[in-house]
Figure 1 (tube, rainbow, N blue to C red):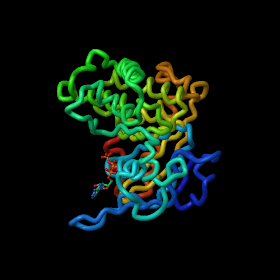
Figure 2: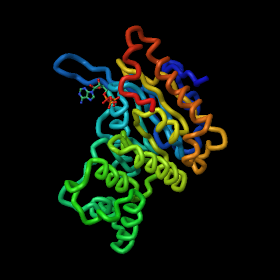
Figure 3: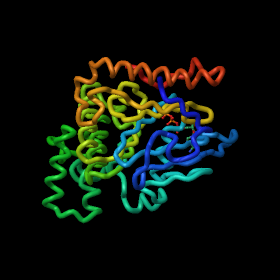
Figure 4: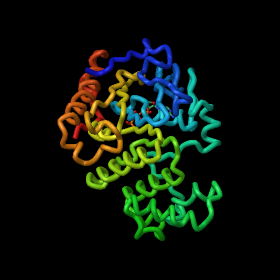
Length: 298
Ligand SMILES: Nc1ncnc2c1ncn2[C@@H]1O[C@H](COP(=O)(O)OP(=O)(O)OP(=O)(O)O)[C@@H](O)[C@H]1O
């Protein structure tokens, strides 16, 4: 059974299942986000409560338009909540952005076209004054990890979309940030590369102890990566359930190898998240057929 956590029931730090020791990586309390458009107000997010612990991997999943990217943009200080409070490591989202407390890899790779692949990955290190020899070796290590060593001197427009995305991921990891915000970072990758990146990401997060907030449309991806999967429903965007991943012996991130993909516990969790997605829609008449649009069960 999933932990059914209606938003209205979440009143304090303990109720979403995270015991807080020190500042959480992300705390969202009673957050609403409305957009005013020519055709009226869009309630993108309503009554969002979520705590992501300092070393936790949390995925956001839900049908298209349920507000996943909007929530990520609020955490990254790319937009502001209409109501409620949001902190990152106990700071305002703005302060955390200024302090470069997190790495970002979003759907659009966002590379600088006039910089080579290596120079794009090196950018955060340059901004933080890392010496050039240390920078070069770190960039080589990162490009090796995403399989792009041979492309270090190319420019972004000479790469495929998936390769550009891998450059953006390498860049987001450059400084081993203690929080990673990733919005469908693997969406453009072929299945084999995607699985490799998933395995690498789990290992990197385990090695660095980083917290990760990860948006995906893929249920197996969410299950493979996460400690908890946050299931969202649309109109207005709400958290309908938070499903803790119970993966038996592979529960620790360092134990998540490719074998997990064949494991019974993995399939059980995939089923549980799928049911949570459908359950969220069942509360809202008329949404059943739409509930899994944009969510990939493969
Ligand atoms: N700048 C904006 N102005 C007006 N409406 C917006 C804006 N940004 C998002 N929305 C609306 O807010 C809702 C949530 O959008 P959001 O992009 O967060 O959804 P999502 O769950 O990330 O979708 P997808 O899975 O398709 O990426 C949608 O109805 C969208 O149209």
